[in-house]
Length: 122
Image 1 (cartoon, one colour):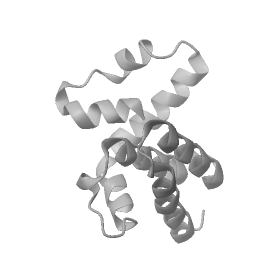
Image 2 (cartoon, rainbow, N blue to C red):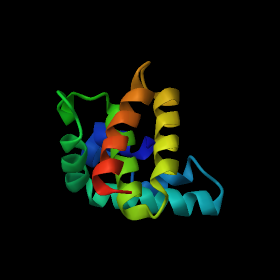
Image 3 (cartoon, rainbow, N blue to C red):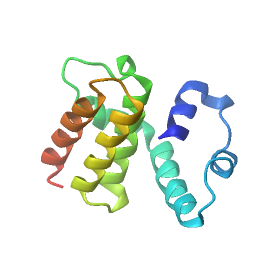
């Protein structure tokens, strides 16, 4: 989520993923997992933005808090392409929202991702 946040704010000026991971993780399994989901989400960001936008009620994607927007992108990718059970992804995303987002981020993230889960029957 931190890499997608970084990329969202800095765009083309963002650090490359490998450099970003090098400074934030040392466990090879964690690095491999982070690499996989970050690359997947980055490569499919326009598709993910469309999917997330579809599940927003009375909100535009660009009006969301940057943290919430990137938690939703990452979780949507993982639910649709990562092979992790939707319930696990939602739980982790809610926890990230509570930890890094605003007061209402956890509930907001839960509602959006649950709508995705129900529609996709995950």
